[in-house]
Image (cartoon, rainbow, N blue to C red; front, side, top):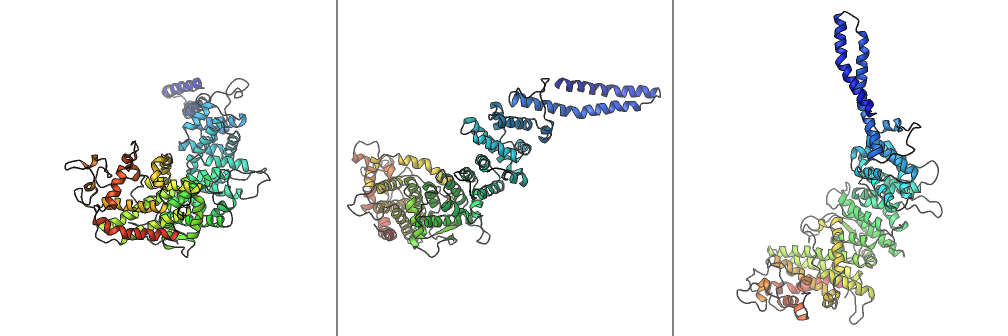
Length: 636
């Protein structure tokens, strides 16, 4: 074909040069030249045909070299390569699309894809022109059949690679695929049960990055089919990959759950999944935590409004399930429930402080005066229902750690706001109110974790020991949230804590020995004091570094002219305004307890020994009363 195309090129050039000469010679002799029009037509035909010939040559070359080796069956009886004219037309004369379709069809027949073809497909998954060409040439039904066969091949490496490549390619094409193509993807086959084919589609969806309308429409069709009765003894297994797909697209996930009033109830009470609810939990996190805003209205809800509405309904339905003798953890992993609780920690604190409330679930629009700036839409929780869900969730220590850590950082945020108000000369009211609110929040969490009502002299059971260890580790951790405030607590931020929390759990228990000897109430009260001191220091309420109430003025062994930062008793960071965490104060390299806890003792000596002076004595007593009043609702 290459030689033929080149020969035609030479003929085109020859005709182009000689036809005008012949015409001129005939005209000089006054002879008829009409017959020369045939030469012009031939030249024109060659000119228009050569690009297509070159394209065909490229197509055959792509199929037989770049995309793989030739099949022994892929020849005519004369040993020449076959060429599918119909497929070539459907592929819009695109060499890579033509080759990809041939190799995918061959894989469907053989049950195994050519390695070179798989590699070439993987290279182009993000190419929108190729992806759209491949999907339209294959067609939705054929794509579904290919995915089904890939899934049926099991967990082999190449089968998994093919599933991922096809899914990513479909995702790239999804914004431009027609509604008819999309609907055909989840159409019912004329005969047989479509479970395996829908599983193939769902597996494709979890790999790609899809246009939200495409993903939502397909997800709803699969969900509607999955709710129908299946043949006896058969499980569809389509919802786990479908939820994985939704978890990667928060917009589609939110529309999936918010757009169907039966969806949450179905998945939280009727239909437990084969993975124990891990994929469902991640999809719920995406739907409830990604979008946080205070835009729109109940009549014209924003995504932030829908997030809060779903979170409130989630806790309500979970509590109803538990009350009826069931279990929320049967449907959703505690880790996800913990992240959702953490994302709505402001609402947890408000209900802890205010009591049961008259609203069972819905969206809270009123502002929390203890938080600087505008809050996102909040979720109403019934306190009894919230406690019920938290008690079950906190059977997982990592879920407890997520909520406790968020509570610690939320407390820091509102206490710092109170300290800023005091520093600005607006009195102690905001600070004392916020400490009471934080105390209430800690009391509710401690109660749900079984730590708020431990009797003196009574041994802790195994769960209480575990949860007390978590409380101690979180209180002493120096981990911190972004400074933007409550609105910054999104799914992305919470997910980033996972690795840090893992490190916390690997901590040396011996370093926590002192802390674990204290009760939950004492530890939390101490944390409130530490957070208040930290904010007061940062706001300059203990004076400058040379003030007599500043911590550096109290350091034992500090002589005139010494650098307080090098003093072994120093418990501030180098700026002289930032308090170390309790964990940072402990010298883990020390070989004796005196040196190990030197900084801790120096800090407590300064704070409780009168050396912090009037700035602390004016606030410490009402601070303790506010905290105790808040925590005492849950007993100690």
